[in-house]
Amino acid sequence: MNTIIYLDNNATTMVAPEVLEAMLPYFSQRYGNPSSMHDFGGDVEHDVENARHSVAQMLGADYDYEIVFTSGATESDNMAILGTLQYYRDKKHIVTTKVEHPAVLNLCRQLEREGYSVTYVPVDREGNLDMEFLFDSVTNDTAIVSVMYANNETGVIFPVEEIGAFCKKRGIPFHVDAVQAIGKIPVDVNNIQCDLLAISGHKFHAPKGIGVLYVRRGTRLRPILYGGHQEKARRPGTHNVPGIIGIGKAAELVMQHLANKDEVERIKYLRNKLEEGLLNQFPNAHLNGNKNKRVDNTTNIGFEFIEGEAILLYLNEKGIAASSGSACSSGSLEPSHVLRAMGVPFTSAHGSIRFSLSRYTTEEEIDYTLKVMPEVVNQLLEISPYWDSKNKKGKPIGELAR
Image (tube, one colour):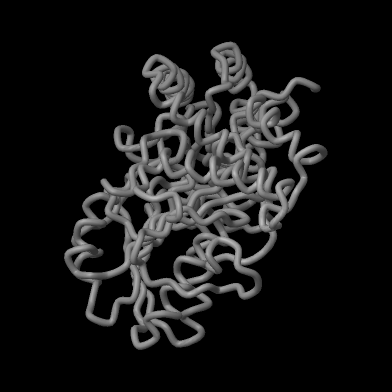
């Protein structure tokens, strides 16, 4: 099928037409190096600084120089955590959560191997953070607290403002991975009171390969890369000018989008229509995550007794792109670490699908998805060894062994 209904916008987004148009001149006409002293490079530097200002406005930053351009959120997360640890060398404790993105989790696991102590804050069945556990975990040896704003799999929003106020009172650097929040909810670094905040352009209709680390004025941070003087020597390397122009334009579009309440409500309506339609059609379907405290574009639904990978393959044949809450699609038989941390039952975790919308999603696309899902799910239930097709109910997991 040539037509693609793209419902995987938490993985990546299309580059907005306005963003692409803004970027194009910097590949062929305005290709100067912004670090050069001549006017041809100086004009480009001016455009880079305009883009920096747009990103600063989107984040509510007080100063443009608090915006550091990177290659993406993985680099930004690493820069925030490693750069902080390099400064506070006498502190060996990190606090994060069990449901962070691998950019943070895998870094923390590596740091454990190097001698650091890491506390992983748990979540409940709805994906809500155990705040009392988090607050009790902080010690005088804690170098940094790192918590995501919104979860990439469930869309659940964490109370980062409350965490930020706590960290500020304790004098502990606070890093926020805001990748899944940007473009979906307002993000204001001063309301959060964070010291460091990471975003990635391709999650809000800018190109891949460009990201930002917000670094609050006065924050102690050592560079993790060494080279030229770019980004005030905090992140050396020749600027990715087309990407920077793109993320600047995308930031402007985010501000316009969030100011349009009708458009924000439209995305929520479409998400709810899809979600309610699926939950009402299938007795084996359950919502993963907090129904109320989440970003408006995301729903994660577990279909018991069938494999998420199989659902995705069938949907792909129908021209629908989504993603699985299970890591099966990456070659692992283990369910998603997020769903495991939430205590989602094995039979549901393996059949969990994440649908994530964008401002380009249409109601016709949602209607088509609701139309084809019964065929997909029912076909898989018919061949599932854990589903009693006659009685429309699940079988005990151990039944096959008898």
